[in-house]
Image (tube, rainbow over all chains, first blue to last red; front, top):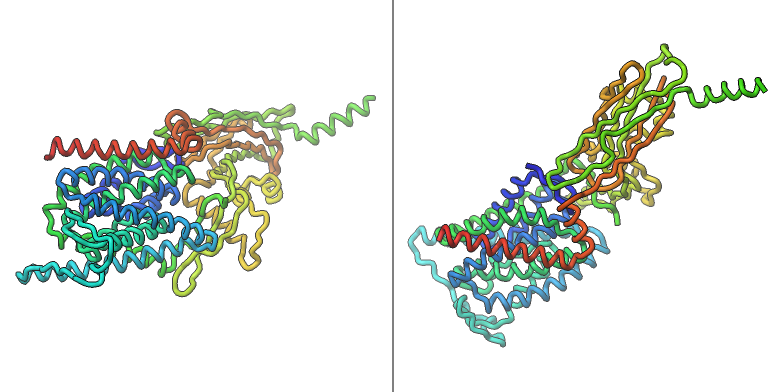
Length: 304
Length: 252
């Protein structure tokens, strides 16, 4: 069944959109990522103009992350205090990121930088996560109890110490703020919520309890993508309501399924799955940069 | 006095070629609704003439439907430092969103090269590039790329042999406009030809407009963008909450 999208000005199969929304939503509920890094290439592939894809998918992520947060909230697996600190950093970061993006636009080659950012960060994050979770998996196979290391380094000497009860942490607010800031900058440049960077950063850099990582990440993503949606709607007018509704209908259902399956899987298995998906997207984008494309020319907008 | 009338008559018959085209469209308005999946437009008409039709040459008809023209930036990927990156691009001044040409026979047999150029009938003449500031590139390649890419997308197409002519007088054709239609004023040009020469041409307008829900969403996004953005977020939150509540109820 084809549906004409009023802002994108293309006609697309409604069931295809429901399916894409459902698939990405499922990952969102499972891993606590927004899924923007998957959604953008998928939407562009089916013929949605890139500007509309980026803006509309932000709106869809608001829906699926809110849906996920509600479920996690009930299970008390959201660290709101940590989420607020990350969010504060994230908002400052995205403000900086938007400025950098505007500057790069003037210099040209924004697209290239975005692609390179994707390949580099997806590669690093995916690779590290893959190796780590593989080791963790081997350790448990051998029957050795995976010990959570408590590093007492310079991080713990920083001021503004806060107690994050749900995360089982007593650390300075500065590292989470900086993580939020860094992710915010990248998110604004790459046009994604930043969950795929945030989740590993929470686990490995902040040492948060894995149980609260997904819910807290979704909590933060919800606000960032909400702000992104509003910004795109006002400045670029590229949010397509019909596209968003179709994606989020599939998305919220997928999220709920993901949230329910998540706790049944082991944390290492979950992480290794996310790592594989991230590495696959990275490989695809990397190949596109290196392999000679069959069509060298592309049409881009109206030249305004 | 008689001489003047005679002269005038011969002049008129020579200039007007005695054959004119009268045409109509099945619809002058295309409404884009939510379920819009393309639209077929039937173009039909007749040839008006004072004298009997010439028997030594065939009558040909070309129908060309053009969408609204907009400038478009074409970029070419180049290999630099081992990776393929876009160049600065060339701005093609005018490229119609849709271009369809239906004709009685293959376009090359129907219209002469000069008339093709004069009336800009073929797809090759639909895309125009007026000036380019980059001397180091070949703008013609970029112009050709627009045509190739839009042909691949099914937006530009030729329909040779689809115009039916009956008794050298009546003609009819149907052109299916694609589902990827952009709003705007489209035009249909109908050419009457003999021996590759254009005898007459008429033009009809087709107004393509979004209606109903499509219109409402589009207008709101453009005119009340802040409200639109807030509503989008509220819809998202409501959907998220509903799904969560629904699943809690049925799959606890």
